[in-house]
Image 1 (spheres, rainbow, N blue to C red):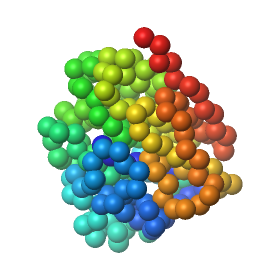
Image 2: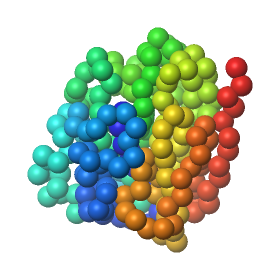
Image 3: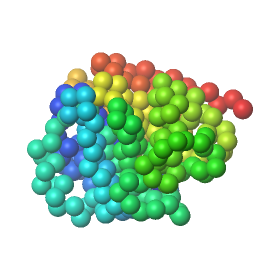
Image 4: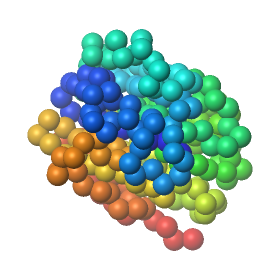
Length: 230
C-alpha cells in the first residue's frame, strides 16, 4: 500500500505540496491517518513534475523522512503539475528506486496506490521494475491512458482482491481511479489536488466514492462511475 498526491493548477513548489502540509506525504510516510493496509510507507518515495511538457522525476528506495537532499532542493522546484508518492511495498516485491512511483512513458506520470496479483495483468513489453505497480503502469501505458477506467475494471474483475487506486497526469490533464482505497479532492481557484488522504484540515476537502474515475483539466472536474459488471 502507498499514499499518493497529484496537483494540477498554478505552479507550486514540491515543498509546498509534499513536505510542508501538516499531514502531507512526509507525515504520511510514517503516520498516515487514513491508510487501511500497513502502518508505514518507508519503502521508498518519488516526486514527479512537469518542466514545460517534459516529465522529470526524483525517486528513492529510502524513506522520505531521511532524504535531506530532497528537503533542501524541494523549495526551489516548482511546477503546474506534480505527481508524488510514498511507498509501502507489496510483500515479495523489490525495494528499489525503479519500483517507486511515479512511473512514466515519457508523456504521463503514474502512481498506483494498492496491490494486484501480477498474473491478473495483461502481458507488457516493457516495465520499469518487476513489481506489481510497475507492471500495472506499463499495462495502462500500453493500453492508452484514455482506457484507464476500462483497464482498472478488467484487472479488478481478474483479481477481486486487487486495490487499484491510480493517479496519472500529463501536464494538462489529471485522472485518478478509486478501487479499494481512499481518495480525496481539494478544488480551489488555484487548481485541483487529488490525494490518498487530506494533507490538512481544510473543510473544502471532498472524499471521492469507491469505484469511480475522476478527471480534471482546465479547472473543470468530471466524476464517472466505473463499470463493475462481470
